[in-house]
Image (cartoon, rainbow, N blue to C red; front, side):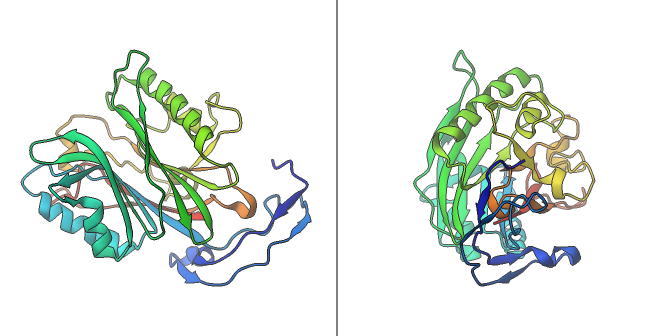
Amino acid sequence: MLTSATYLAVPVGGRDVAQYADGHGKRSGGLRDTRQVSFDPYAPYGPVVESAVRVVTWNVWGRYGSGHEARQAALEDVLAQVEPDVICLNEAWRHGASTQPERIARRLGMPYHQFTGDWEQEDWVSGTGLVCRWPMSEARNRPLRAEDGTGTGQVLHVTVDGARGPIQLFAVMLDYPLGAGAVRQDQVRQLVRFIGEVASRRDLVIVCGDFNTDPDSDEIRMLTGRAAVASPGMVFYDSWEMAGDGSPGFTWSNRNPLAAVSLYPNRRFDYIFSAWPRRGGVGHPVKCELLGVRPPEEDQISDHYGLLADLRY
């Protein structure tokens, strides 16, 4: 529950969430006047924002395999169809002077992109890619490591200068072994501390990426409030839980031949989290869907399926 006696109305514009009942998001303009009003227990967030930011997160499997150029083209096609505002790419690539975020940005007509990474592969570098409709700050990278320094987890933070206020964006990758739950729990604690250090709690906070574990794990429960949270007051909506289609939402699926070879169970590894809503309900998920789901006999885009979420903004 909100404890403040007042709230500030927030600007409205962009993707119109009132259209989501029939599955067609639209863009609308206009600003609502900013003013103080009395707290209403029947509308604890004030007038609910009827616009949204569209976020995509996708582990895109780098340049692995002989068909990586075909996978890149298919990835761009899917992203062009859904018209995201913000894209977070795990296992993105840099090859020579070219980067995957730059290619996607050029195809989609999105002016801002970044690549951060230093994991050397055969003739390319693996890392994290960001593509955005609005300007981003310089990326700040925080390794997420076990107490002995081992592990491969990391989080990348930027502040997005969005059209309707700042967005604190965190792109995350946690350790992958099935038995690494204790390591991931410590990484979640580090992640939440980092968020607390750099992000204003007045801003929309989005945390997305490949967490390499399912929703019932202790590490995800720490984020969603089903277990003791990593820091007081730091609790997040799971977009799929709030606004998915009611299915398990597996992003790692044995229907996908690129994933099946690993002999892992079906899991929902990839998430778009948003901090508990701000004034106007900013951050509340209103739509969430999988991307890139293809029949097993067709060429796949990645070993993971992508995830899209629309968040009130």
